[in-house]
Image (cartoon, rainbow over all chains, first blue to last red; front, side, top):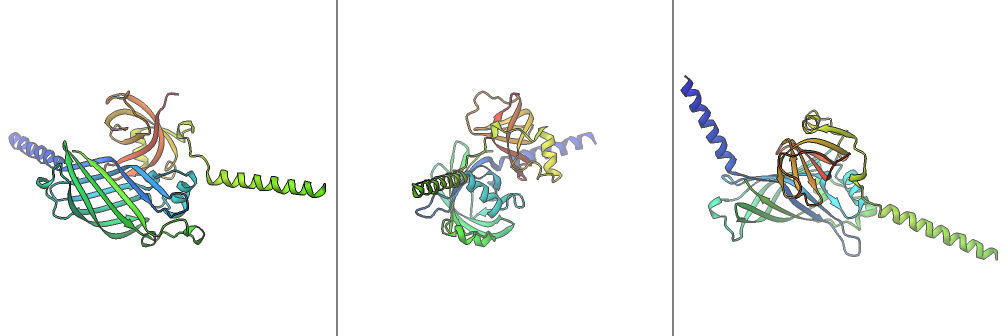
Length: 182
Length: 126
């Protein structure tokens, strides 16, 4: 009886440590977005506290950015971003959930390899499909992911008032950089 | 003479208006380090607040959190595995196991790691 208990416990610990090893994660990934137009001050926000987890066995990837964590050069822009556009007190999170297509840990090396990331992005309470190219490399057991893609505010039901719409680009360029470790 | 005075007043009004407009557009960022915390708690209490959905009281507010450092990653620390604090400066003087009080801006709750996140943190020595 006692023996069986310990065997179960041992198996439990082993599986736990195994699953832990296949998860690469970070709490300090970096996402920058830019919606600048020529001849106006730059509209650019950066969040340096993005969380993400990559399951290296399945290629599943999830990333969570707290909207309030985006910081801008202009304090007023930061205020408008949170209060008027993103409504961050109602929709505090921006979440991506998806999968790196055909990801295999054995293919990842110090050389950059490219994958397609397919999944859904939830911003401002609206979920939309998203597909992006991702550059992946691994240096000293740290997996680095870099991706760029374009989002449109209107897709996520974010309304830009006519008064300022000339100063904010319709297409928002997003750059995300992750250094994941286990 | 009268015209000169009117002209002067109009000019003064324009300059004042421009100054106020400029101050509005380019107002200063908050200085979290100098703000008074709305809340002083231990790490687990802050996490519990988010799990009970009492978020409006602390979201985007300055809070002070106490506990033991359980992890250091770059310029950020985790307190009692429950609150993650990122600093805008290097934190070479901190070590895992240190007892700290940290003041920072609460940016929300991270479901992935089940932690509360603070940014613009500073070590708080009252």
